[in-house]
Every structure is written in structure tokens, then in C-alpha cells.
Amino acid sequence: MNVLSIDYGDVRIGLAHSSIDHKIALPLKVIKNNQALWNELEQVIREYEIDHILVGLPLNFKSTDTQQTLKVRKFIQELKSKFPITVEEYDERLTSSLAKRYIPKGKSIDIESARILLEEWLDKR
Image (cartoon, rainbow, N blue to C red; front, side):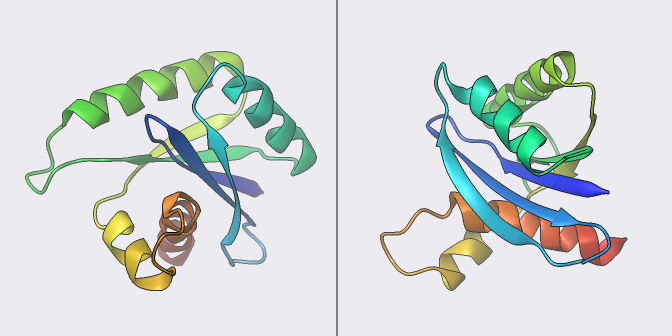
């Protein structure tokens, strides 16, 4: 199974990928959250033969929804309607904080957040 991890943001979307057999999450790229988003995702899904998508769900510390959570849930619904692939939500609390520790200052944390999300998910499997 090939997995794509998505760290959704209003401006940028971080992507990471892995094969369930390899159990290593690899950073992929950042795409802009604009009109080209769906075409770029389709290209990634085809190129990496993705059959499972993991989307980070930004819950607060009380495990309840935030404004961003509502946006991500809407994105997930669109994702499910556009691609006949299993889409799974995954709690992404603290991934951005962890990502900031691992990347140089000034670099985008979006890819690293997606990678950490996928790595956590793989570790639990």
C-alpha cells in the first residue's frame, strides 16, 4: 500500500509519502492551495500509485474542532469526492511544533509536518 500524507493549510499544503512495506515516511513537496491544487494532487496520486491518503486533522488540546478543523473536514470531503481512494483523518496535534525543531529557520514546515504525521501513523501500524 502506498500512502500520501497531507498537511493542509490555507496557503500551502505539505505532502509526504511512504510504502507501508518500507515504513519510512519521506518528504515529498509543498503545493499551493489554489486552483491547480486538484490537478497537482491527481498527478502525485498517479505518479506514486497512492492507494491511501492520510490527512492531518488539527484538533485543539481538548480534542474539539477549531476553525481550521472545519476547513480540513471540508477539504477531506472534496478529496473523497474527487478520488476513489481511502481517505483517513489523523490527529495532527503537535506535528507543527515538532517540525519546527527539525528544519532550519525560514524553511517551510509544511513538508516536515506531513512527514511527521505519516511517520507517527506508520509507527502505530
